[in-house]
Image 1 (tube, rainbow, N blue to C red):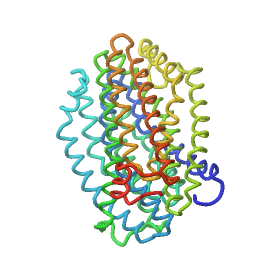
Image 2 (cartoon, rainbow, N blue to C red):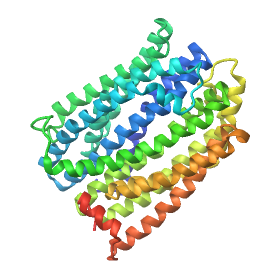
Image 3 (cartoon, one colour):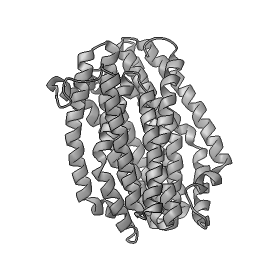
Image 4 (cartoon, helix red, strand yellow):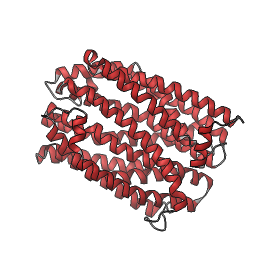
Length: 456
């Protein structure tokens, strides 16, 4: 990524990521479609209630692995193969211990978590059964994400896509088999997801072992003490950021749950569609993160800023197209998740999608700057931006929920994006001034000392 066309590099890397993120969404979508159409709105609402809790756990692990991948990309860009291998083994060993502890905590505290988000009593048993199975399979989620990010850090974005397509199709097949044919209910949908994730993790492991020797460490259990501190710094900040973000979404679920099963089912449907839209801009952000990190390692600072400008334009174009589709075909999109006879839920979902379509462009600077700041090592900016947007989202959503229904969440998300984009633009201007020779602030100086990743 440190040579050739900037836009071409970003697009070439982002396109497989887009497909990968779309298929990643299919994990949850397959469960929602199968459960909703085979078991009805109550079962769909139960899994919909569980999904935000799952996302908090999953995206905590995603943040942890994302943080380590920034370091891997930097080492690869600098040609430091030994540190690259040691970073992967350190992340694998330390991360596995953390994930097992997280799984145990999730299983033990399933009911209290459901109570916190005010899950209706009639949905709690199904949601609890679904969650426990997902928690038991978190170790596969961790290793798939770690190995996928490791491959992407060295420029290999096609293989993770292929493995994800395979596991996503397997998830669809197993969901139908377990729920429709075996009658296993929501437990069958959860088991399908776990088994499919295990397959993707194993495929990633063997591909690295056979085809990417640049990544294969001497021992997968080796922990490098010098690297562990840097890894913990990047991974913890990135993990906390992802956790705060999806904890905020979990709290939003608490605003929707008192509105009844119909609203919960509608919100679950639109959340799946929103996930597809946001996965596209997330792909550009991840591509920019790897682009910036590799070029920073290679000393190509000018390409880092040019990459930001190109990514903003590309992301805006793709997001605009999605917004147009949501305005034109909201009913067709929402009906994929809601069975016959769910007219009220469908009407609420359509209203939400049309509202969100008007504001999706606000997400472009938010996500793109997140990728940029991760790539240049400014992890605290990413974290603070999330701290800013989540309280705004929650406050607006709860304030308007009684009068606006699930559309209150759309208003809250949009308000959060405005505040987040404003803060990140302010931090970007400070960063540019610093790169041009200005005096760093105390916060920037401490971050450089902790992460040792100063781009200047």
